Image 1 (cartoon, rainbow, N blue to C red):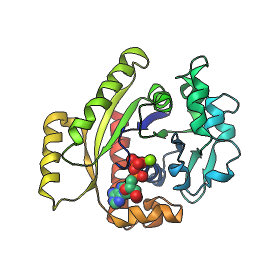
Image 2 (image 1 turned 90 degrees about the horizontal axis):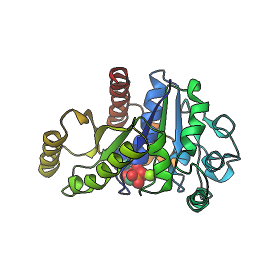
Image 3 (image 1 turned 120 degrees about the vertical axis):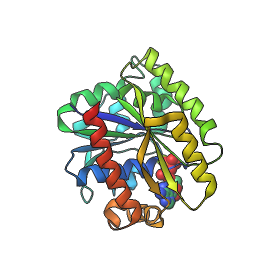
Length: 256
Ligand code: ADP
Ligand code: MG
């Protein structure tokens, strides 16, 4: 029932969290029931949805250790129209604690199965590493959304991620596929970005989403108000692009 997507890229600062919270808000805006799972101990997706990571009763940590269900631990991001399974620093301990446990990469998958009927979309914001936490995300997901900036080294960085996804696909999760590459923080006036964008389309064809997210200061300002850009300023260019991306995702899911 629920389609589950990881937002992943092993590089930091490429726009994963911005994509996760704004896609969640965009999907909610067009009537989808959305759960946003924060798998990054930094808790940026949690805070960026208006949920205070310091006062979380239960979090994704409890879900991974199977001491709470998704239903028990998720909270409403009230202004945003979606639910959040939050994270904070406690989650960094899970990395070590999971190592000795059974089914250590399938904890999130199992937990989400129990909440399957509650949501149309589950979006998982991954940390910038290929860690046990990210593996839990990849094992649970039907697909991966890869946000990327059109920079010189962008293609090179993709190789590691593509190989990891291939390995997870072969050994742990036969459902897993790259849904698409999302061009973010795009500045059409930069020739290099246009060139890399063309290269991406040559290499990856249909796997490159049609929607392009522009560099837009309102998207960068929104987190300090504890809101996704889509909610903070719906009229901003970047916000409109994310709503358009939400529509593109709904279409892709229908074709899956
Ligand atoms: P990640 O989760 O991959 O580390 P973030 O989503 O936190 O990346 O983004 C890194 C920084 O770039 C943040 O300060 C964010 O506000 C900013 N940013 C992300 N997307 C955009 C955009 N389209 N336009 C302007 N700033 C952006
Ligand atoms: Mg992040």
